[in-house]
Image (cartoon, rainbow, N blue to C red):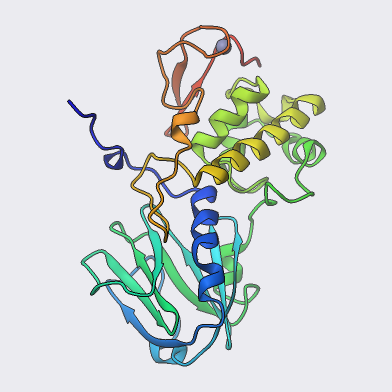
Length: 282
Ligand SMILES: [Zn+2]
């Protein structure tokens, strides 16, 4: 019997998926001219301009900040977010929008389509990323994990005095962006840190290891196109494969790959945490 499809397990698009999505269309859409905009049902936030305003504008660079994409246009730009269940596809030919397709940017190079069954995603126009409403949405984001500014020293300074568990401090996204649930679990395993450890109690050498682990895990996930937890497919129809490489996440009860101790599953802040009670210390 075939196993149940992984697509039924809900999981949010995380930074690697968003970055993979960006890479899948950023080059191809650059220089295209908007010929039409089609809106479906309301998304999390309103577009913030008349759809006609976007028509005949030229698309510039598409950059990522956290889990947001900013697409520059002649006048301002669009801030895109995939929410809980969104995915973006860009193709020269897409059929008529289906019931879950809520934003089509029809351009001279193809159609960029946001499919989002749960509609927590958004497409918002702003004059610039540092203008409202984009500025408010981008405020409070931590450093990028691949930025030189993110290292053990940064992590150690940012965690100082925090009593919250390290797993939740990573997930909050205000210290470093992108350490979503699966990646936070994997990075803590790699760094040998118990996810329940009070964040402010983690020593500088352990912060060095943790920062390196976050960066390496996200880099690996990016190379694989994200996780297979959800039915994520980028514009090339590629499904990610990080989940198969996870060493603790989703492996509760199975032996630790390092020491053989059964992996434990706990709940922190309503999110599942998996860890090895022997390899990961407070
Ligand atoms: Zn172990």
